[in-house]
Image (cartoon, rainbow, N blue to C red; front, top):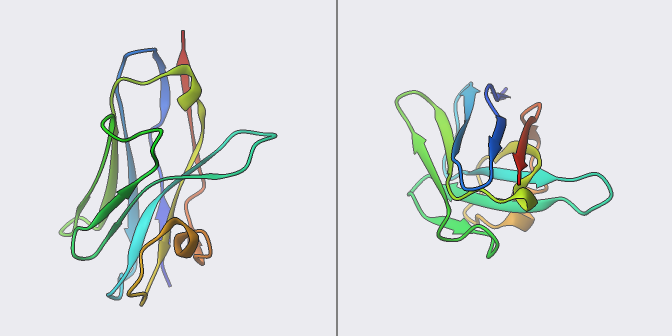
Amino acid sequence: QVQLVEPGGGSVQAGGSLRLSCAASGYLYSPYCVGWFRHVPGKEREGVAAINGGGGTIYADSVKGRFTISQDNAKNTLYLQMNSLKPEDTAMYYCAAVLRTPVCTFGILGLGNYWGQGTQVTVSS
């Protein structure tokens, strides 16, 4: 069984930076796909970034060049470094994991059984 815990989040002014983390307890059986979604009430959930066990990454077009996803396998922790934040990045951010999958896409990740509790990110203008 895998549990995902997301401390952090927070508020920042536009142009600022935040780093989200997601600590996984339990073993992430490879191949796996882990990543981040975000959700704003009234809008569809959006895939933000994902990474597979081999380090391959995907990003939403809206965050390319500003956000970086990474993982520390020794700590079983996933990170999302968010730079040049914009007010439209304001959302609840959730980490997610899918195990034993050779495919890592937002579609696959969105079907995952393992989700963090979510953390609020607020960017003010």
